[in-house]
Amino acid sequence: MRQFWQWRDDEDPLRAGAAAAAAAEPDDVRPLADPTAAAFFDVDNTMMRGASIYYFARGLAARKLFTLRDLAMFAFGQAAFRLRGAENAQHISTAREAALAFVAGQKVSDLAALCEEIYDEVLADRIWLGTRALALQHIDAGQQVWLVTATPVELARVIAHRLGLTGALGTVAETQDGVYTGRLVGNLLHGPAKSAAVQALARREGLELASCAAYSDSVNDLPMLTTVGRPHAVNPDSDLRDHAREKGWPIHDFRTGRKVTMVALPAAAGAGALVGGVAAGIALRKHYRA
Image 1: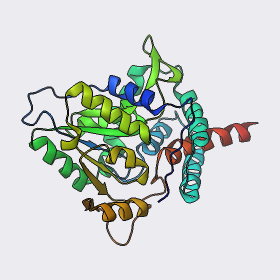
Image 2 (image 1 turned 45 degrees about the vertical axis):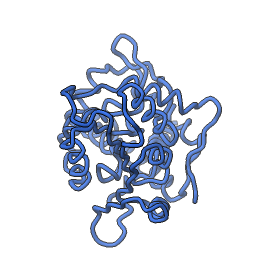
Image 3 (image 1 turned 90 degrees about the vertical axis):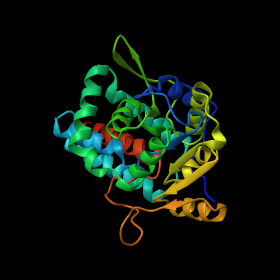
């Protein structure tokens, strides 16, 4: 089976996971009936159709904060990453730097407000109702439910709040005096970093990982899925579907018709596809302006 994530020595997944867990804020602190169990859900193509960061960029474009050309280049780069079927540390690192350049100097409060607006305008209608129902089953059982995603934690928190979940583990950008510095705390929450974040949160919250569940569409999330005792495949890619069948994991598919691997152009296989599109968009924008 192919594994798409690779890491350089300076891109420690433990550091990224620790940063995500440290930034995780429970949205609801009521006593739980089952406090040692939790469920962890990937976002893109698992909880929602397509890539959340693409639709966030589309909302920015509607506000003239992100140009239509940027958006087109972003979609083009995203599709290119998907068709290549691979991602590596160099792609992710380059894309990360390009994406962070966009938020440098922005106020945290402004971005948080934009996340709220854009969720209501664009993201809400893209939530898989079947996946949300799975998440709410865990809530009804008195368990915590966390989103785990490479998406910026600010956007992930809004999605979690709107869906009535506990909170979110996401990529953490560094801030100073309420303004983004243009650097990350740790790294992108992707591949092994998701597993590290889940483990760090489990230690903080007193969770027993053998009693926890995890849900994802992508083979890139095998580190997270195999960290818990109850892994599930949701709208899985072919590699994850094969692995889930081999291991006897539950498979949930809420797509309609034949295999729907691209519900829309921005459907993304992993962090390389997400931030790779950003990198392509910004690089091509610089090329055309030059």
